[in-house]
Structures are given as structure tokens and as C-alpha cells.
Image (tube, rainbow, N blue to C red; front, side):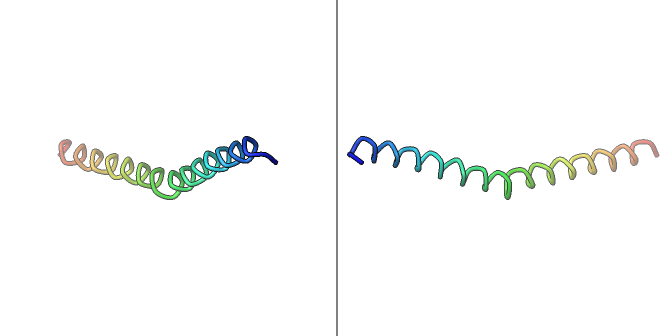
Length: 54
């Protein structure tokens, strides 16, 4: 394996690893944070609508 193949392999490995960690970050932090935030917003709006109807 010469230097160009080795550097290409390192570039591939770097991009693959970055994608892997980005996927892990999205699945463990961003998506649950987004779901929890939207559920809390919906709950807040429902509570405000109940108060406004009374």
C-alpha cells in the first residue's frame, strides 16, 4: 500500500468516524431535546387554552 492509498484510507476513516459520532450525538441529545421541548410547548399551549376558556 503506497502513500496515496494510505492517505485516502485515512480520509475515508476520518469522514466515517465524524459521521458516526454525529449520528450518536443526534440520537442521544438533539432528537430527545427537540421532542421534549415540543411536548412541553404543546402542554403549555393546552394549559393556556384551558385557562382562556374559563
